[in-house]
Image (cartoon, rainbow, N blue to C red; front, side, top):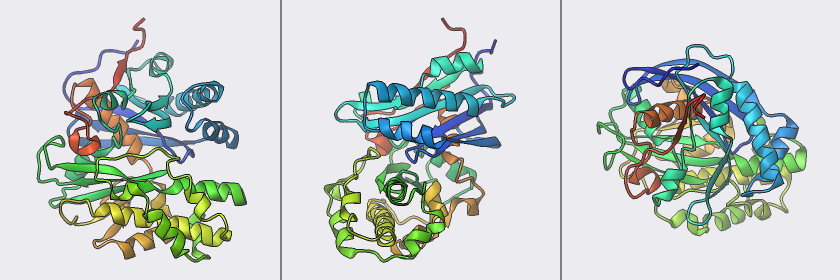
Length: 370
């Protein structure tokens, strides 16, 4: 039987993330006291099968029903497999899978039962990270910014810096490392920039049976349709002040804008839309950042990275250039947040989600608690 979570000192936390790209589960060990990063442990990627991805895709935007139940089964089985076999772990941070996100309407839905996972793993599991933030008027997203603050401290950044995560949806965190704590006013600003890999992946899956645009090869062979790009940038979301967040399918009409284009031109245009959304978002930064560090799958697309380099007024760097793991940063973030929840520390604040006050969201489930 697992022991209680220590109230002080460094813990080995195992974090898991299944993002809106629907490619699989990332898991990673992080050593932290909930404030500083002390070290990094092993990590693992557990890909979804084609059938599992389709089950998840079918449930997107649903709040209940048979499709949600099927997706929940996929998420729980995949996470149990991905999280098993790690040694000397003190607790688990389990995000689950976001199927629907409408914080001002129905709320936010991440499927997966953390209590059941705690029993199966015989480890404390921290989960349901977003609900408390939404209940207090926040967007419930993005949640990685507090970890980005810790990363900025870890790499010894001394000037404002941005972390740009390009998953299914893009989100950016402006970090001012001159502050001592992430919840201090001015230390963080975070928001979703717009769609990123999701529409590109969906288009290529539908048209060519490809999961994603490997090395940006399809986009590189096409040309950007500027008319479609201008229509996209006219969306009211881009002029809305942060905090703000998106559901994976909020910009599903992007596909309609490129419907008449060739595969190559459509891919190039969707890629340009992602980069242009980031450029628009950068205008909200309080001060010009010293660099933009790119994490998530989008950093593997050289066409997208070239577009960002041209569009932004500061250096654009893959996050590996500063010694961090761009594949595992989100999983590490939920390991970090799990420790903060277990120790009663905030995980979001007005500058990251627009929540009315600092909040530490999450449920801690202990094995054998019933």
